[in-house]
Amino acid sequence: MAVRIRMKKMGRAHRAFFRICATDKRTPRDGRVLEELGTYDPSVADTDARAVLNKERVSYWLSVGAVPSEKVAVLIKKYGEGGTHEAAQAAALEKLSAPKVVPAAGPAVSKPKSEEEKAAEAAAAEAPAEEAAAEEAAAEAPAEENAAEENTEEKPAEETPAADA
Image (cartoon, rainbow, N blue to C red):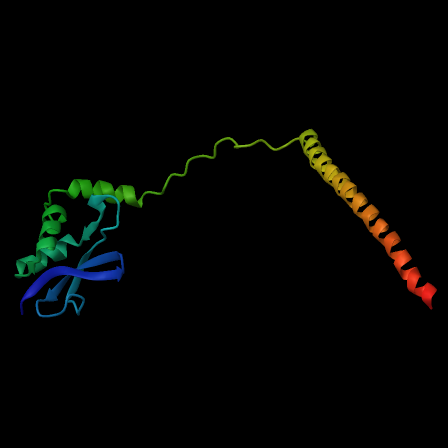
């Protein structure tokens, strides 16, 4: 049986995640695997923390004749046993697993208002309301006068038919 070490695509659309697996050469890309050997997550910000390999099992499969794909061969060269980026990967994984530091809360953006400031704001809010009420009353007064004049003009017209009867 021809064994290949290749990536199996997982995840969802626009959020790919890969498992590095030992598979039979004839199986489909996402088909049945013989053994999972690690992971590769391209969405991790730190490049050296993207690939995680089980180095012992990778070296075993290579020793029995498994052939890695081009991409996996690069990952094995960098992060496998005696890889060129092993120290950087260890530091990146340690940094990734460390708890995130949240900065302390700074001073308040705005100070709480004192009672004097609250009273001043309330008075300022009431003053425009009083002015608006006065303007409305002034606008209603001429309208009432016009309505009274119309009523007086109609009364003589009503009296005329009553006189004929």
